[in-house]
Amino acid sequence: MNQLSRPPTFLAFLTAAALLALTGVGLFAGQDATKKQPAPQRWEKQIAAFETEDRADPPPKNAILFLGSSSIRLWDLDKSFPDHKTINRGFGGSTLADSIHFFDRLVVPHAPAAIVVYAGDNDVSNGMKAKAVMADFTKLAGLVAEKLPGTPVIYIAIKPSVSRWGLWPAMKEANDGIAAWCDRHEGFYFADTAAAMLADAKNGEPPAATWFAKDGLHLNADGYAGWKNVIVPLLNRALKDQ
Image (cartoon, rainbow, N blue to C red):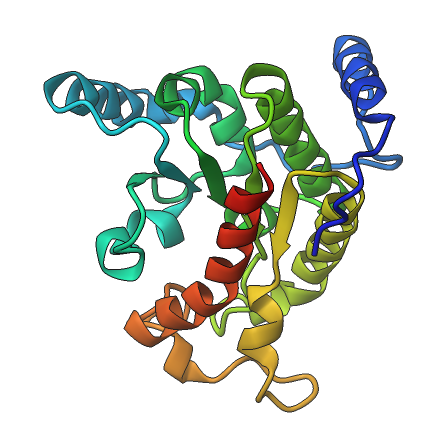
């Protein structure tokens, strides 16, 4: 989902976002995280390890950067995307706020051709409201537009997992809000993997266990293949539209 006409108000959005950040006002009315979220600094050793790896073996420029939580970290990107140069910057248990905090170190140095994001799952699991997840996504989008202008972003829908099925209403609300936002802004794409996962599920039931590893949370090889089928057309379109 993405609208190809460039909206005239995106720069205004960035300005407004900066002002709201300074005043401490959320980008969405009624934003409420409900619980204190874990501090991003807990990932300092992991981010430093990425930087050490990059110095020892610099990753390619103009690659597809995959960013987010364990669903990214566990993904065999070389197998799924053999026709693309890829960089995996998944760190398990992370949230959108963590990627925002480390954006200048995780994302900017790579100058990626496109960014694929999976985060939001842990955010909701940690007690964050859907509108707060949506607000964090727009903050991340603002950083991309400011520091890597023209770089397309594909956001992978928060997955409806077996183990977190009770949280699905809040996750779906966040997905719907982010999808609508992407639809209004050029260069931002929503990969509706959740719809694919629920396609064969009965109303009110989680997706088939065949998508998942034994924990009912992380994907197995078939699950990643299903995600790839949704993402590749969007990725090809995003790279073509640049």
